[in-house]
Length: 388
Length: 83
Image 1 (cartoon, each protein chain N blue to C red):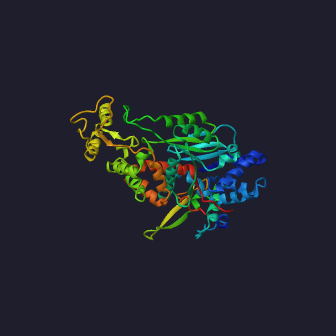
Image 2 (spheres, rainbow over the protein chains, first blue to last red):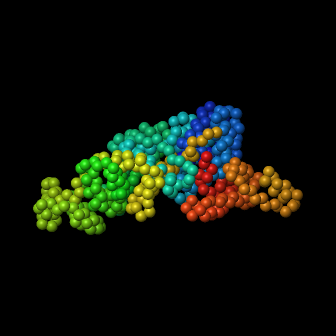
Image 3 (cartoon, rainbow over the protein chains, first blue to last red):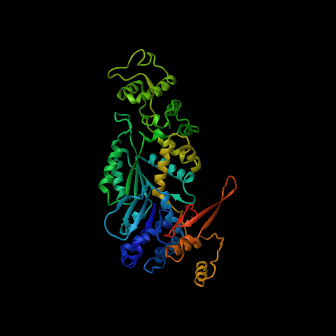
């Protein structure tokens, strides 16, 4: 993450260097920069003073000296990140505010916050589970390789939140340092067409950020889809099974690909791929909201490619009624495990290749993957680990 | 030294020399930024030209970068100074 010393630190430097806590904060920040966990910057004159401050340890002098030579570039990187931090010589709470009129946000943080070395470690990524986190990390690397600045790296410590416990995990991690939480929005088709409400996981995580506001640096980003599986490009899913045949699961994924259920953008990003689709679902959807009639075409396409039930499709010759399970199954559902396969596959690919899958122009879910990559780049950017 | 030369020429009411410096040194570029920050060098008096070769076409483009009044490089490829 880009951490910038406020110019006011220059005026208060004697007081800061007198305090052991604040000296620790300066040392922790310098070491975090050196280890590539964050980018530290500030006015060159302040960095020069810090590089010569006898109250600071010798290893930190070298880092500040090097930082001074990066300063004219590093501070400019605030224009390419969506979040950054300004470190101020004051006590009190952390403030989050908009920077200018652009979609860029800034945390104003007291220097003393970093006197605990844990808070200067690489930013924490809390996702709904480990596979989600692995996929997001690869998306961030691909973003950096394809769209980000050359020469920087992106690092985070990732944690799986455990589904419903994601909010609890966020609460625990946010206390220890900068934390970004990415969850599925769990968008479903509902009567409030166009403004889908977030699911319980995202809502609970947001509640946590509101409670911790002022004390922590943490945000929640909900990916605008039902589940992250909805955003996986078809070619990537099929590639996962190119080497290993996983039997029935493999067949179901191929079936979903044939039906165009993967990576189709807004057309299919709220479908429940784990549970599957039956004709009755479609009937409920199109009756529920007339503006959603365009789904009829989608389902008609699916139906043409799905095997017809022996007694014919409901809605034509008959209807599956009451509490009976609908026999007109368009797609049987994937169940669990797809994301783990995809995460395994992505870890074997270069960042360039991952970018071709997730971020290629024209790929319907590319904007969503770009947003995830850009967010994690902002929270995890650093220079490669350096020697001083 | 470069900035001192310009200041000395101006102080002696001589024609201000134009200095063209070819460098690979980020320390030199950063020092210019620091001098802008402390007001010893006007940001309008310095221009950084960056020659960038396209890996595909092998053609070279020249990027003009300047310093903001705070000594921050504008229109600069972030990461250029990365070790």
